[in-house]
Amino acid sequence: MDNIDLVAHAKINLTLDVLAKREDGYHEVEMIMQTIDLHDRILFTKIDTGIEIVSNHPEIPTDKSNLIYKAAELLFKDFKLEGGLRVNLDKRIPVAAGLAGGSSNAAATLVAINRLWDLRLTSEQLAKIGGRLGADIPFCIKGGTQLATGIGTDLKKLTKCPQLYLILVNPPLLVSTAKVYGSLNLEQADKHPSTDEVIRALEEQDRGFIIENLSNLLESVTLKIHPEVAELKNKVAKLSNKALMSGSGPTILGFVSAIEEAESIKSKLEKELPREYRVVVTKTIDQGIVEI
Image 1: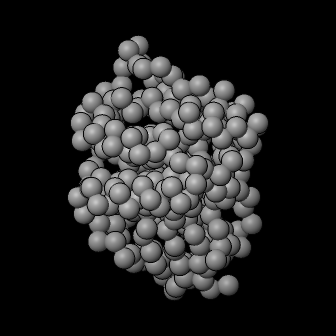
Image 2: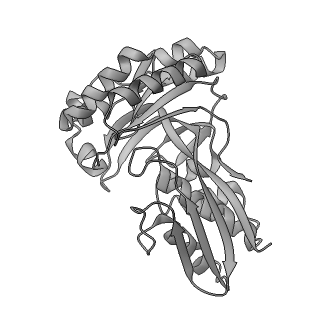
């Protein structure tokens, strides 16, 4: 096999709770992570030498700072692999949007090299390697609906989420995850997510309860730092059943019951919002990295 074509999906959090700050500077988290259908498509090809990245997105770095490069370099060094890799990235997931786009690309890179070089690593082994590069990468390898604890790398598979439709609105704004976590005061934090209750609702396939109890502890921090994100959330909340910020932001998610409703809201938002805002209709899925 000389090449492989993979789909790398974005992720959202159904709940995101921060429990404590650790001595190493990381935070202990508890969150329900969920794969969505929005994805990048990536073609990986064996070449004679080096790591080359080509992308359709002008803001994507193609040097060693890219997580794709770091993931490839890690496996090449760990397993003393011969040859090189060319990566053609068709970027569709918004950049720096709280959707784990970079992490899903790194996850796909690990999966691709594992198959192209026939390393025969299990998903557990790949996830452990991915955790050395970023906390979201293990989840992106496994996908579906998972409870993430520790710094986000300890995963427990949960009951498959009943299909949820959502409108994803990404404003042209960069949010610093480090600043959001640095500004979080756990003693003054808002009400914590009801993670255990949402897990029970997943087991009972109670779509209404899940949507009603979607929650993100970081949301209040980001909304205070960026009032325009708060304004966007209010706008989406008026049109949907529930609005929620993804990760540390700035993307806002609007959850609805049917795809037709999502498409209707998308049309309204595209008319009301500036052209720079990206509006996407998507849905929850039960997959991670998928070969085309």
